[in-house]
Image (tube, rainbow, N blue to C red):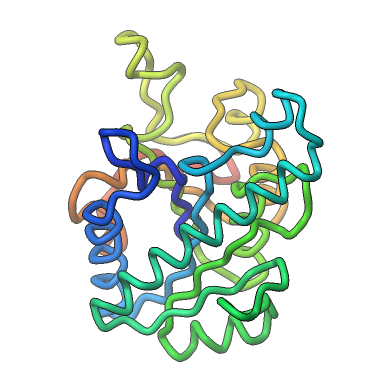
Length: 233
C-alpha cells in the first residue's frame, strides 16, 4: 500500500494538481506493476481542501470532512487517468457512493482487482468524518492483506523534528510503533499507527521524490525509515 499526500501532487507555483508530477509518480507505480508487485494507493486531498482546516474556520466538521473526501476522489481520478495513459489497468474505489465516476469500495472486489494486476486507488477515506487518509490507508492495507505500508514524504524518512526547519533533527532508520507513538513523531496520526501496530503491518517512510527509490526498496535496498513491532536494531 502506497500512501501519498495530496500536497505531493501540487506544483511549486501553487496549482492544486501538477500534471508532470502526477505523470512521474504514475511511472514509478507502473514500474512496480511491471515486475509483478500488487499496488494499492491512497492519496490525500490536502492540495485541494483539508476538512480540519475548514472546520477551524467555522464550517461544520462533518461537512468539511465530506468535502475533503471529495477532494481525494478528484486526485484519485487524476492518477487513474495518468496510469491508464501509460497502459496500466487501474480502478478507483470510493468509500462514498459516487458510482457514476468510480466503483464503490467492496473488499472482495478490491482484492480481485489486485489479483488481476490492476492498481487499486482507494478514495474518499473511510467514508466517515473525523478519520484521516492515513487511517484510511492503514485500514485498507489491513483489509487487503498488504505486506507493507509505504508512507511517501518529501524528506528522507522519520526525524526527531522537521529537517526542513531544524538542521539538528535526528534521522531514525528504525523505530518500533510504540517509540513512534511515545515520541509523537507525527509519522502518521495515532489511529493509523495503532491500526498498523495491532495488525503487525510494517511502515516504511521514504522520500517519494527520489526517482527510482520505491523500486529499489522493493528490490531489498534499505531506504528511509522502518517502523515495526519489536526492539530497534
